[in-house]
Image (cartoon, rainbow, N blue to C red; front, side):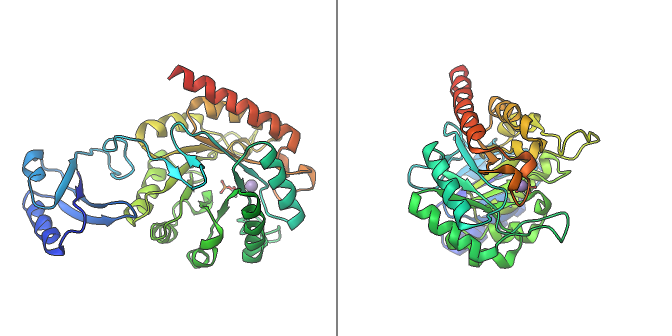
Length: 337
Ligand code: PEP
Ligand code: MN
């Protein structure tokens, strides 16, 4: 059960409410976000909604049978739309493309990419400055100075930034330079990081864990939401399966299923999803048709020279064609709804 509390309640009223709920077998967990104040009530006993609805301090009450609560579709009337400002929105009805290199490499590279994005009407640039690499000897990113440079150039051109945060300690320094924090697949169950990102008022995109289930992804989102941050995006980026003909198995099923289970926006990442350049296009289009609210993809002026993930990165021409096709696919899909 989710109880939406009235605004500016006296703490005594909340305590009374919690003890009344305890009497009917429910533990009330208080959650205060940037938008609302809730009691998430965990318990199993049947109860009469009307008896709780008339308790002091209750604005609204919702029955949620899913094990995750706040991220469940069962209680939200409208899907969550994450607003980045300047008319950039993510969520149902607002298809967004996020594109850029795997890693931020140089100022020249960022300027070139931003120009390419502007020419193609793409509003959000991706690029890692802290890179989780399988080998410690690979390029691991330009760090905070790289992020400042990335931010300076993107601000000049009115392009938003999504970039990965790997540790709790990085959040504070990164905060003013980031529009969306990305949590990578390798950190999908780093609950300390999720707790900490729940305490900031910046959108967070959670990538599905390398072998993560859909439920685990939803629980990760519940961590962020229950710590106070409602601005969450989920990302399907391929999972590890027995198949080794490609880097990961893009689970397009998950996109359709997540859209059914949660009110949060769902993003597809075809670059990591298959890991092979020539298949990025069909997989991106499949993700759009499956219901993705956006696509995040890797783009580089010369993919062969990229510091990381060049094998799955499109050049500007290939990317430009794909943006147009994805927008067409989204239009087509919207027409069917
Ligand atoms: C990335 O986006 O470059 C990345 C490292 O993604 P993932 O965490 O999905 O592997
Ligand atoms: Mn990458």
